[in-house]
Image (tube, rainbow, N blue to C red; front, top):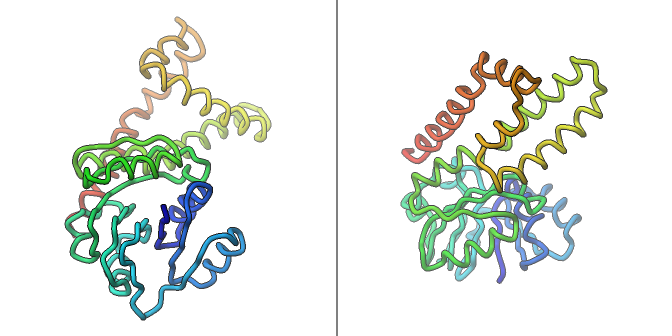
Length: 255
């Protein structure tokens, strides 16, 4: 299958790195400099500048990776009816996509930037006729989860789409804590990276509460650390972060 990727931002480039080994990729973008850089890194792919003349997307499978605010301006430069639109535009409803882009099928999806390393957690919804195709494509860049409604996708976006930023703050804070206590930063960063890898494996096989209980001994170091987290309302802050991100996705969908 040939995939036409429209856009050149961080997510577009993450998808490109994750999919280029398995698919014939064409990249279309308005930024000639970035296109040149992409072509230099991936000489085997086709790149094309999106200009004022209409770009014909007839029959193509489109990975639509522009910012939500750019949907209208980019769509004005496209003509023809695509086979399937795979949109990664946060909060942008399928009904909105249909007003700007013509296609036989529409899929909304939200990967995260770990797609670059084939480790994304990608949520998908849309036309069930192409459900299997969508899952196959995005399974090439990591795990996938099909949800039944667009509202569920917006909630999933707030967790797995935005989540790498939340976890990055936690990782940075853990390392800073180690440095404050007296450990060399490079050692702290290696420990934190290993910790996240270990935690990912544990979470695939255990409920978070069970992991917490297994690590926490009576009167021990972990219990002291957990008490400090509860005192500073870390759990509450994470819940509110997901709520805020979901609310923002909802607001984008209303525009």
